[in-house]
Length: 373
Image 1 (cartoon, rainbow, N blue to C red):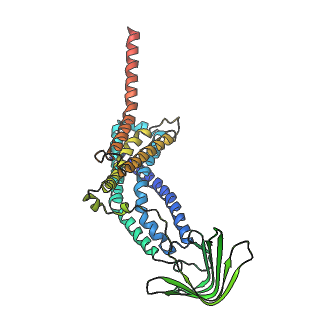
Image 2 (cartoon, one colour):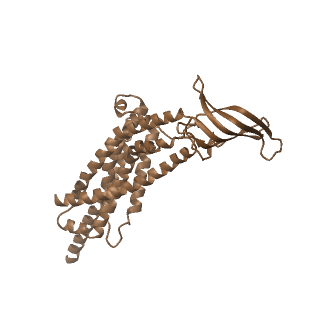
Image 3 (cartoon, helix red, strand yellow):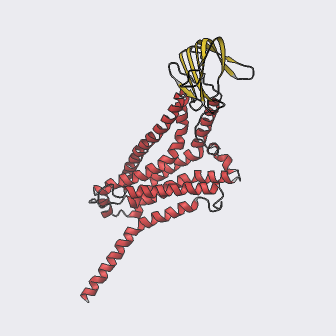
């Protein structure tokens, strides 16, 4: 039990550190993407952290298996490098016992991944969909930030206001620039400036920005035929921003509903969710033999081949999921054959080295008897 606790502690500490680093890297990339959409007025900045929080379970369900795989390689690689595994082997620690000890913390990770994939991730994505649906009902007026130029409508419209009241009903120092195609196929430009403005909501739910005391300029860039109109009151329709966030609606379906459904896509999604905790056990079987290194060879000798093997496993699993969705694979085959294939690879890696050493010992013994004869 002392050896089990020691190995488990070393492994879990490494897995936690690796998973935390991977989570920060992935979430940073996603946060930058959402932050860019908020800067364009497509998202309310106040919901960014909510979206990231609700999406975190979906990230973790894929990060934890990789974190465990790399954790086994790094933790056990250090033990081999420091000759601690040599000492343990001399006391009777076999590869089979090491695998059994490793499956203990792997079971904890698999249980956490199972809860994330079956419960937390679908609930989080459902909340993200709810937030995005609320964002769809917003206009550029609701996402406007004073003192900043914001692009809308694929960059064809730019809006700016110098001041904005706390209740977002009054504006001052307004600038709106919008480009459009003319009948001749050329680009036209319309510029609106106003001293102040306010929002009006019509009975049909559409919203207008009512500008006061300003000018409108119409023309084409590079030409001198601009038209200037001075107005006392001018109404501008506020378009609703289109939030471009990639989400699969099927991933937000509760697992309980998937269990009771006979739809092929629902069955595929359920198999995918069940595959993630199973993935944890399979990568553990592969990582234990791959972590075995010679102290003279260095700690990271097998790290790159191991990562390539893991990427091949995950890529084949994703490809099989896509093939099931498109009906290219029989539903009875499912995703289980991918796990079976890489489990066989892991068992082959686990028993190949002891088998090779045993065969070499037999050849040496047979050669010795031949020399004596």
